[in-house]
Length: 421
Image (tube, rainbow, N blue to C red; front, side, top):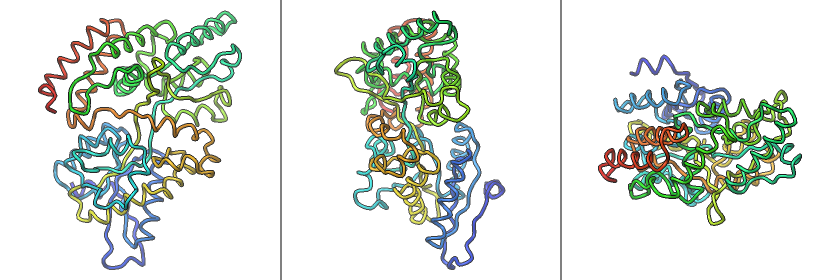
């Protein structure tokens, strides 16, 4: 294991490092600017503290990266001190991570969006620190809504009506490729977050509640999934059943959809110089069901965690706190458009100058919904797969939501031994 990781690592040494300096290895995402910002931030910490940092290469695929992490942790290897982890992994990896509560200064947790801290807390232990946050957003064509005197939809029923009206009028005018709404409906994790947003924003709760009880089979959840199924072939193309984030963005960015559900990353791409919809796009919170319901967005993002097998847990925790600090999160927002997890930064003038669209994100991030990965732990992947397969079947016309969610409830109860995860 040691030889494998060393062959993948780049070491940054410091000429003036004291003899007692620790060498801390960190596994960052290898994707483009994400890796570069991690590297420059960790190197700045090393220069400031007199320690050394070592960067461990990881696969681009989140699935492959998780498999690597699990292999290393199962071996109780000290080869990686700090792990960059996905927001749905704390419950799965918690037994291999230290409790960061002991290293936090007073008041630091209170600066964060509450849903992220809750997500990263497993059995009372803060097993990861939020690094950057994502949440589902509604993208819309400002020019098309203005052309037809339509408002940004507050409710899902408003979205349906506006999407149909604009699509029908545009098609009559010759824009035959236009659809009303695109989203992520392939049978994969992306459908889990979309479906959770539909259910929760209609007052239907989540898949599993905080006590471990399977709650997904309820009248409001059933109505929400059936409503989404009615979009297929009407306001959404049948091909949406195969769409991930990028297929959705491709349709919207080429000008072929009025509305799109996607993550914040799509904003910069939609407004790139070569984008056909540059300057024509707006963003808003995802719709809600009724007057008494809330706007809900699924929580996404990345965290930093310290291995329980690290030879230098205190120094590793110091690196994590440095990289997730307000100063570093501001730098990453300005240079890389990464969304901060610290609430006050959404009023920072430098961040808003670099990313004018970030201002409204604070409201969205304040109402995020975490997936039940913390409760389900190492069974989360199976929970999610059963859920998105049941929803996908409904969207595809293979049974209705009442039948498919009832069957899902039975499967999840068996998987959890009736709520004992």
